[in-house]
Length: 94
Image (cartoon, rainbow, N blue to C red; front, top):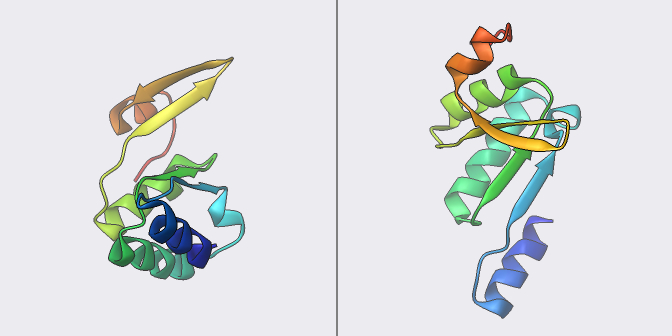
């Protein structure tokens, strides 16, 4: 998939949006960290990562040095949330 994204970027002159859906189901933490280093080093463009566990996403951002935002999708609405809001709602985010 990374090769396809690179080819699209070369042909179109713009970087494609990448969506990684429940990536922790497929990769362990170590492989995920290496995968993100590849994405960062090649500058693949905007990246969306979905996961049902905010702990995964928070540790991913912290370890990779990447900036990101958190959004909660519930009952057809999408709202940006902070780590503090997630913790206040009883989610264990470390």
